[in-house]
View 1: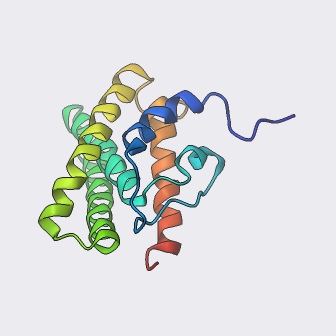
View 2 (view 1 turned 180 degrees about the vertical axis):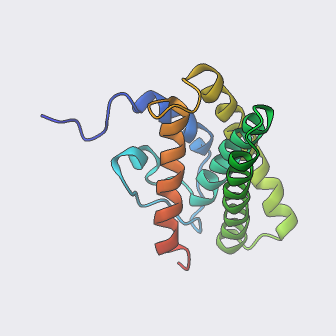
Length: 153
């Protein structure tokens, strides 16, 4: 019997969703799921996952810059900024926060995602297709795809 969730991915995603352990409030839009890779994120506040993904892509941009990959760094930076903007906007919509308060709330999971991103790149196979970073990146891209269909809720 095939497991519902790839076993190799389970420990990789634990860190990505760790910062989402804080309780959601009733108004938070919760992640409904996308692919098997993003199953551990189901039921977590969308804004918090987006903030962690912003941090992951920020770390990616920093490492690519250090390695002299300006094009890759810019693409990662742009993706991180998009996740950050979506996280702030989602939190403002869900909880009625000011932009400043939403940015402050997003900063902790963003920092967590950035630290995890650096760790996954450094200790988990770099940017290779089967690396820990690439699995986390894929989860984030799943979240972004699903969000396009639920963003106006």
